[in-house]
Length: 136
Image (cartoon, rainbow, N blue to C red; front, side):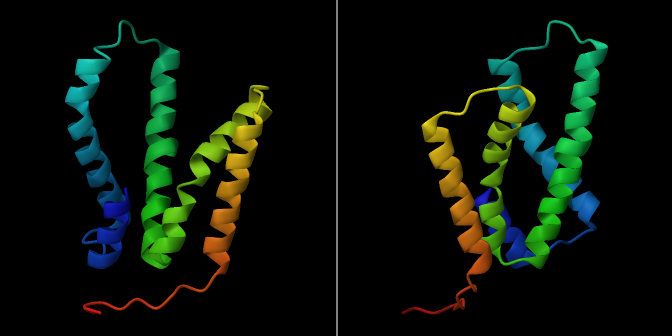
């Protein structure tokens, strides 16, 4: 993930945002597909609910989310964008608490506090100047 963020920031986006996002997702999916078949195997049955869930995850959870992610990489400093990825597990735990009435442990609350602090500090501190090609 870190390499992709830095390289995207360095090289830019050679095609439109949606096409760029699609190619990245296709490449990642093709890379993981043999591993999924090896570890998980073929699903035993697919229901309408399974297909609806897959459609939701494919469109909103992946296509929209990653389109916004790559747009953020283009517009924000890399250090600020990379910290935003930390919010995903914190949001998942928070939504589990709100929607599914799951309990949060003290360790999880401390971890979320650390994440929120890191994101806040990373977003509010001015970026330090980057020296490219410096040997010392």
